[in-house]
Length: 571
Ligand code: PLP
Image (cartoon, rainbow, N blue to C red):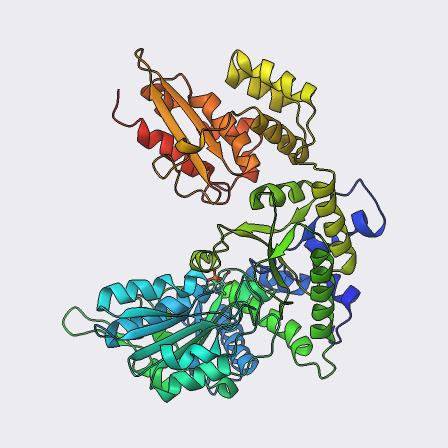
């Protein structure tokens, strides 16, 4: 498939089309899936999945290391993939293409292999206010190690780097300028050519984080004239665990390896200093993601015709989706975009007046619509815009106008009919009276009748309504649960009988429901009982584990951790 045609393109993605009958044939026996979380990761075309499987079935072997045919075959495909990447981004040499496990690792390599060895106290690293944490934290670490200082470029009201400010911020003190080509929250194509030129004019190294650009733009690193360009395969329809660090050969040659191990050495001895392999292997310690890299080559073959099409059909279609979605959202009164104007790529961020982002995202999930809510790994951007988080719809070229219609209709349904509030007094009283006696058993009974996430979500929202609000004065920094993406507060009391009583609250309705479930397990218990209780088994029994990310999102783990911390060592 070399010519972009929306329907044909969509058909390449098995996970996407497996839900198609829901929309196209109104077949309600099929569960809906409207996947609008493409900035987090994209779905994979069948040919990429097939190539990965074919490698394991037919020529799985380690690369570069063996003198047998199987390894030669694997090595050939592996190195061919490197050449394809070179061509894909217009690099001068294959030696400039380093395999990593993602954009994050690529940035860490530059920060540690180059930054750590060259930065001095008071040297400056310039980042932009809208960076992903992947392009902030590695620089913070190296700044801490070297005494360098981080400076931040401000944004325009439309979410672009404010180029008028670069002369003030990028100065002779600047040693690195690291900036996203496209922000994962704002979807704006930053004026990176000007930024790179400015960095060069003061002798600073430029690094461009292309994680959100590679699926949408044709990249030419020589035209951009940047020193480093990084990206991940999984955001451009390729496999997870594969990334690229492009760097100018002269720079890479003078950099120290980031990690040591097999393949990155020339000679290892206990008596003499170890010497390192030539480029690009010097930075590739250990066995790489061979299957992923070979499948990535297939992905590049798949994508190149669309990105380089003179008729621009691929990007015109993406633009059509963006405009359609943006305009439809704009017509909803409660929708507030976090910056002005239509984004350049399909990343649309907004909040909904009167509703918590998590409540909206989780309600949409009951309609089969996957969008993201939270800080999107850009906490400094949220702080810059005075937000605690936002909703993000991110589109890919396999999405359709019908999906956007369904999303908008579902969102309106949630907002207009007040689905979040649609719980009758009678239902509420029923839940309240059932909880009064043995809370945990009653919760288990309530959930035993639920068959789907839809009905479980409804029960959680119902439970949330039964949680008394904490007095405003108690919703303070001392009771705040950190690590929770929505705001949640927890207060404890200790009875003379040695039992704990918790009261809690949150600004998100869904979290209030989850708090009722958690507190039912822990209230009126001793510290020993609290620590011995298997909360994971409890959640799994309620059928909630698969929906609740243990590390972030709803912050459930943070709530449990806080309770355990507060009750530690007190028995
Ligand atoms: N940079 C940007 C702009 C991103 O959007 C992301 C991921 O969301 C990253 C860097 C990190 O990518 P990865 O997690 O694949 O290393």
